[in-house]
Image 1: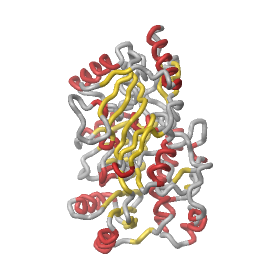
Image 2: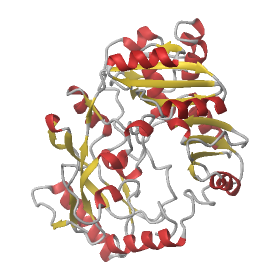
Image 3: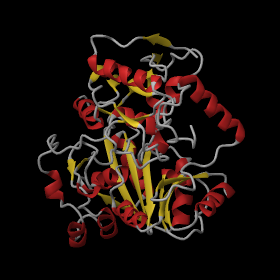
Image 4: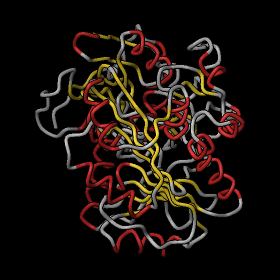
Length: 433
C-alpha cells in the first residue's frame, strides 16, 4: 500500500472539525454515519440509528482544475451540480454520467434536474416514454412531456439546479449512468484521493495522472465502498471533452431482439454511447465525430428523436426519474423491490414477473417485482450474474449478493486496516462491518 499520512491543516477549520469528531467517536467507541447530500441514503444496508452524523458538506470547492490536462481536484462535499457546471464552461464533462437524484429533504418527484447540457429538466413532469412511443412531433408526445419550446428557453438556471448530491457521495456509491458500458465507470476516472481513516489520520493515495500507482490501488478501491473504510475528503478525477455530435434513435422491437441487436452492433465500429429498452422500444444514443454519427445513423435506421427531447430522456434515465422509475418507486411503496441485475450482456430475457428495463447493451437490467429475494438472486446467479436490491422498504434479505468466503475475509481485513474500531458506516456495505 502506498500512502502519505498527514495531519489536518490548522488553516482548514472545516477539516479540523471533522477530524475532531472522528477522534471523539473513537475515544467514546461511538459510530459515525458519513453523509453529504443524503441523496443516496436509500442505497445500501441500514446504518445504526444510534450513529452520529458526520456531515462532509463543509469540505467544498474545486481545489485545482487544469482543463488542458483533463484533470480536476475537488473536495468531497462539493455539490456534483457545481462541479459539472464548472466543467461545462470548459466544454468538458464527467462522461460516466453519475446519477444526481434529488436534494436532501425534498420530494424527488418535484425537484428540477439539470439536463446533459445543464439545461433545466422539469421534475417528474415530462413523460419520456410517451415522447418515445408517439414520436417527437405528435400532440400526444407534447402532452405527456415537456414541450420543446419550454425546454429550449433560457439554458442553465443555477437558482433551480439541485444542490443535493456531492462528489464524495458520487465516488463512494460508485453509480454510473447510461454511458457506463461505452466509457467506463466512476472507478476508471479516479486518479487520487485523500481519506480520513478510523484513526483520524489523513491518508493520501494516487495523484493527478493515470500511471501513478505504486502498491495497492487504494484510490479506486474506495469507489463503491459506501464509506466503510473512511471519510473521503478530496478526489482527483480525469474528465473528458464533450463529444462534438450526438444523435438519439428510436426503434420498435421486443427485448430479445433488442439484446441481440445491441450485441451485434457492439462488435462493430459504431459510436454507440448508450442504450435503453423498455416496453417494446429500443432507444440508442450515438456520440462522437459528426461524420461517424451520421454514418451510424444511416446504418442503424430507426426514427430520430430530436433535441431537447432526446436529452431530457437520457437525463431522466440517468437521474432515475423517468416513467419506469417513477412507477417503480410507487411499487416499492406498495411492497415490491427494485432490483439491479448485473448480467452477461448476451443473456436472453429473464422470465421473471414484473417490469423490466434494459441498459448497457443488456449488462444492466432493472426489475421491479414482488418476488422473494432468494428467487431473484437465484435467477441472476443461474446465468452468471448477481442481483442488488436497489430500493425496498424491507432490506432484511440483504441488499448486495452474499460474498464468497475469500472475498468476505478480504473485506473484513480491509475494514480492520482502515477502520479498526468500526466507526464508519457500519453495515452499509457488508452486514456487521
